[in-house]
Image 1 (cartoon, chains in turn orange, red):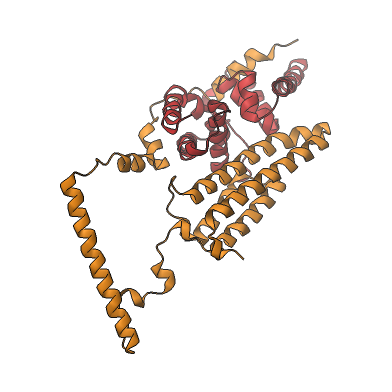
Image 2 (cartoon, each protein chain N blue to C red):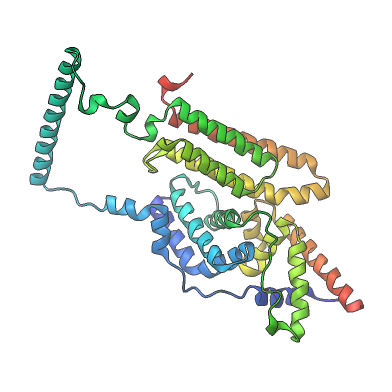
Length: 216
Length: 163
């Protein structure tokens, strides 16, 4: 009788020795997560009373200038003359790219991606194809910026992505065992529960990202 | 758990466990540079999800799941997990080289979940309960999974001995 445990330990140690920790870099992790930017923002000292007064004056001046430009544009349009400045922009350009202004069309793109991704999960596709589809969806809908945790829509998209990731792990772990041991019912039940969680998360994305007036 | 508190915990886990995370990622990805990238990305993803983390779970298990997912995401399509260098000339003539070949073949033949359980047990040094949390299964299932993996290696080695 062979005791395989010591063989496994020694063999695995030789195949992947414990690596050195010299590449560990927590600042890089913070940078990738966007946390550095967030901390810098949160770390901005509160402006003094004098600075606040200056900011207020600048804001009033800018407001007056914008009002003057809008009035001039209105007069120009009313008189049939050429419009200028902001009035020349299309409505789409005038909307600041902000996830809170995500249109129904943009969210439909998300829906398409979700459909594709659900399909991937149901056939136990790999995470890479899922990520590719996710990136494609984000590129198609470039109004999904800014990625900010104060943004409810973005937060729900992150949750949605995490639910999908968790499901991928669960399915990857489940499928070989359940298929080989005939525990099909258990697997079917877990798949059903997973799809429910997915739909729930998708519903929250919908609720957080689509304005009422954009809903069909 | 507060966001700041969670991030401090993540930093502590990173500083204590970076080498174990990297080791498991290397075993999944097959190459150190991409594995390092997967670990960094995994932790970054955890921080980005800090607002949505539900405190009832085990932080470490949650983190392992994220890092494993990140490692799988960086793995090329249809890659067969290969660890170590099979053609390493220094291995020739070494008595343990034959066993290494058996271990490598054994790893490659395991289903995905058994392979992950082996990596978490021997490379991350997690106990059965922690592995169960990472894989989202019962402790008994982990025990059965590792036992099945051991049996497979046992049969393979007995075959070699019998010859």
